[in-house]
Image (tube, rainbow, N blue to C red; front, top):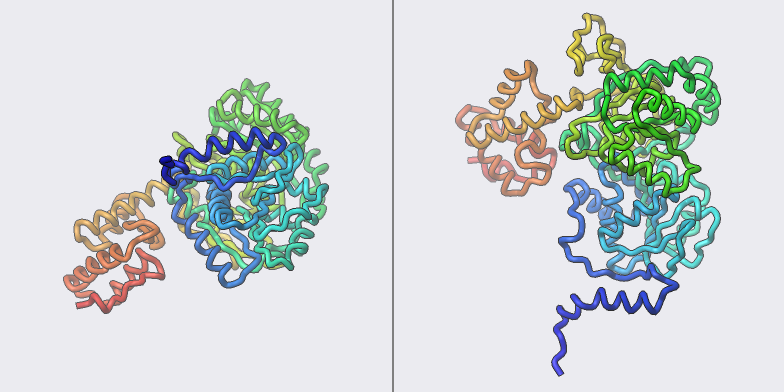
Length: 553
């Protein structure tokens, strides 16, 4: 008898076998399977996402067991995690993925399914599938349910700036410590509100994806534009456990003049944009939605007491444009994913940098036809924490490490846009500030020359085009600098040269070709070898990896 080939068995095996098993095991419909996924079906990772995974494996080889991955909102930290889990899952490892809230379970399941990973779920409303080698657990459920039947080789902690401080999660870490388990935290915002707490209290080392400013320049995030809006005077508001007292905030923020102010400014600056608003509490969120509806703008509010399905219906209405404004106090801060959002209303003052950045990040994801997003800041958050694109590095931090202070900004008297104190011209309306001595900056504060509005992103890409043209025409790199200066009236930042011609993953052949180009120019112009070294470093960074002397004739 002729048997089908192994390849044909592989093609036919999956659906028929699944159907048989589903019939036999109705009580366990989420049976864990090593699914056969064609490479073309697995999402293609970006270069920096691949680099993060590579760094993760290197740290594990060095026996690090508590590793924090920092990837800004929109950088794809769940995709990074899913790709890593897929590799470990395929090699037979057991993995526990802990999310902060029950509402994040479905979103995580969908992203893992894209990689062919079938999971068990430990959360309310889901039946346990104990034979699954990957388990997604809600921190809320872990506080009520024992999982001594599952011992993971790897534990991943989503939204680690919150979840890792959950007492139940910390007990789980202690229980698995003796099993040589690897703990990996995931967060976009590695900061704690309490000065007595820092990510270094739990994690030993850190892997950082590109900063928001870098992702904006590469086109992976939309560029923000900031406006201030008149809000409540916070003088006299009490601080409890490091945060503003909610009762005091409601008295000051949930009043008609403050609520109506955000509505009128939205109509002036953001009319027609899909918008989310962050409020002090549920009553404040409802008041914001009511004010918009009374102004003829379709709006709604959501809160944690609503069933998940009801919230999902409202999210769909927002995404489709049936409503324009959605207000909430906490339900939109983490895990909410509607990329079409292009305006954020910051109506809730906070002392938490993590909360502030999470809120702003909700609108940062790119979307077809979306060229920027607006921040209408009624809570003084930008003045307190500065611009998201000014973040230059991420660290684990130390307790009492971050100095307090006010990020130096100023509001345009013409259009209310928020600018840096050293800006001479408003980036939004062109208003020229009168000459005045600059205020003294915080000694630890470092500002970039870049302001990531849509215009700046265009300038960045234009400079890359000029450098590429100079290379192909055999012109010196400073030809591109001069053309930029003629066009814009000022010189481009040196940092912009990095990755301009060959991207972020140049080959050795690219480096050798560019080196030969520079050597030709060096000889023709009488430059020294240091000139070549300097330009190689500017284009390729510190790891040039091409011995200059070998090609120097």
